[in-house]
Image 1: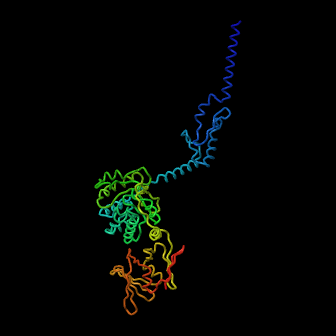
Image 2: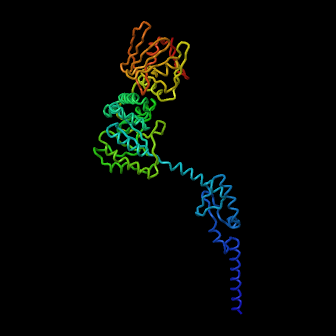
Image 3: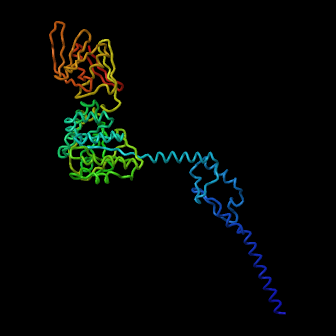
Length: 464
């Protein structure tokens, strides 16, 4: 009897436990088919996932396959990148969406994948430069040459060759003498201007790019950087050093090894084409080939690019070099910027005639307007003849004849009586054009200056 009762009680307890277990399973959503369904639900990266509970079932369990596509389409319109799945399974989406996303990724990758190397050569031109130019010509690659004024003056034909082949010319000072250049800013400035004039006389352009011999680190303080920038120059160091100048006779194989660095998308490579750097020219074809194989293109530097500049070292900052006076800065640095900026036109008002020279068609030197002879005279109604033997130009204007002699730097007026009245003038032959001080030309032609004005819009010269 007692045994039967105990057996009955055990059966009732077991049935009660089974019933409770079934109820618990149903309420919590732990069904037989839940695990595989949950694995197949894609998770969206960047999208908050709700905490699972019996009152918050995953929507994908009850949704059909078309529903996630609609949801993703709406989200994609707001932010395409948020459709990426953590599971790695491609989301259900329309062909149009795929194309749009692919195009966006392709555009980003193309922009991010643009890789450029800028070959730069310092210390030339020299007997090494022709070999460098020939290699660059064969490879159809342009480069930037930071030239020394001393070398440029000795090899004007090489400066012409660099320029005519479409390369860029930068300023590397005149003599590369560290003691002179870094004793004070005014000496550095003097050498920059000296080299600038040498290059301008050969090519007609002023280099706006500047590279400090030895680089700016340890040499430049804030004064050097600030005043050169204010004067309109862009100082450019480098990102990769070929090592071709660390000692005498560095072999081509070592130069090649040091030159190729594929860690950055923008490489400014320091090389040298000065005397004694034949190994640099020897390494150049392989340097170009390595970068081309790595997907790099080649470019030239310009003054509008973001400059690469080394920081000011503690030694340079503490050198105690005297900053130029405010008066010196006002007379040298401030007007120099006008040589490179958009500038203002120069209006010539001579009698009842008026002519205009746009920025770039004239220059300012030592407080004087320097102008092209033919352009000025022809715009004011005169004519100019040219004598190739004597390298002189003959001006016929308002009944007067004036000869401009570049070789002897003299202006000569021929009077009605046949006599000659001469004066010294800083006449220059640049390319095929004669340039001279505007004041000298006007006065010799019988039009003395009356007034010179500069406004926010223009520069104006009035003459009788």
